[in-house]
Length: 239
Image (cartoon, rainbow, N blue to C red):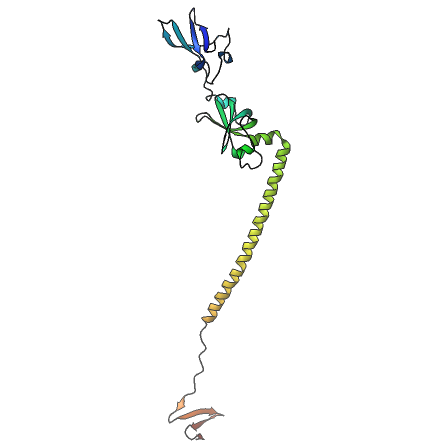
């Protein structure tokens, strides 16, 4: 029926409600089981008065996130439908109960400012699995990596652009180093000049030669040609 599946459990029929057939939301039991299938179930409840037995099925099946890393291994290319757009990326449904996130930085091969410039709800996209965290129920996807991997010409173009950026960066670094060296050279010369100037200022002053001693009575003695001449300063006469 549309609301569940009846199961013969040994002469007695029990019913597995549609909500107990799968971890994902389904509209009809035929999406999971069909008439003639043998399945393992367990008894949820038993009402003898109403002669009703409720059975469970999904609890015996692994929860989707428990084995997500096995179905979506890191590095694999997967396909899904965009179900939600947010400012930081787009959520992609990989299956009814599992969504993966394409971060805005992984949307395209070029920088993307607005998610809706690249994707819209309902778009089917191919992505590369970057990380799977089953405990946090989180899968990280990259549309950029899938595009590069599946389109060699895009990968080659990106490699050329990267090489050009590295070349420009290296040239700029060399120019900055040269400018720094030029700025440091005058500074050193000025420092040397200032040091030299300081040393000049610290040189001891030259003392004048001492005057010849005066003789008593205002006379000066001058030694000349082997004899002494005495000059009287008051009369300017030679004695």
